[in-house]
Amino acid sequence: MLGLVLLTLACAIWGLGFAGTRWTLLDYSPVWSHCLRYVFAGSMALPLLVYRRGFTHIKGAFICSLFLMAGLQFQTIGIAHTTMAKSGFLTVFYSVFTPILAVIFLKQKLRKTFWGLLVVAMFGMFLMCDLKLDGFNKGDLFVLVSALFFSLHILAVDHYAEEVDSMNFNFLQCFFMGIQGISLGLFLEGPVSLAPLFKASALTFPSSLIGFVILSVFSSLIAFSLQIFAQKRTPPHIVGLVFLSESIFASIFGRVFFNEIITSKGFMGAIIILIAVALIPKFAQIQKPAH
Image (cartoon, rainbow, N blue to C red; front, side, top):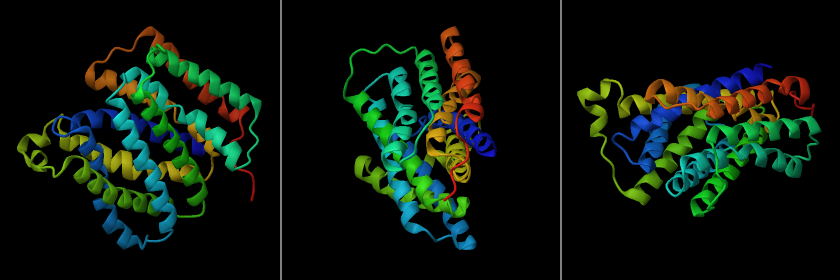
């Protein structure tokens, strides 16, 4: 149960991160928005890693960082070529890919009730996104590929981070992503100015600086640490299902900060997802089997 609570808290933080991303876009492109997010997170993680002597399990943290950065990059490219509704729905296909990959690579046998809850939750996402399945394009394909990498990240964390310090592992992951972020940003778009972050207006709400604080400190350093810690107690296929609640928190914060309307259909979809997630302790295996 603790794992579910921590994963839900992480999803709430990531939901707020959608608002933070929008605020960074006031001054930065989508590419530099998420590249700088990890440059800042990695810069803050470095002294903490030195202090905590956290430069261990480097291989695992590096592999996890590659999957996560690839997922974010493909997602960014896909969003530029498809609608928000379709990208939102296709992204959460990681909740489908994760259990399939777990069955293939981890040889897990999942209960039929889990697959039922997954179908119910995906139907809830269908309602939330008000999706019309027409005109599948290259943007949709990129988003689906990003969902696959997010699934691989969940499985990689499950494999590499089980016996390690969760905070050190995530800080090291963020450090590697910071290096990848600055390399990708320079390669894709060239140098970027940090001047907007040092203006007096940066301290007023909303601003790109506030957005980067949310993304770098809370979404990256804190929320991913919660994920890694929680996955020690929660099987990866359950993690993928719980992560669907991120879209609910994103909708709530969208309403609070951007006055985005939540339709009755979207509200019904959110309730369906919450019910599916709430039924996990009763109808799906939570604890990992002993090794």
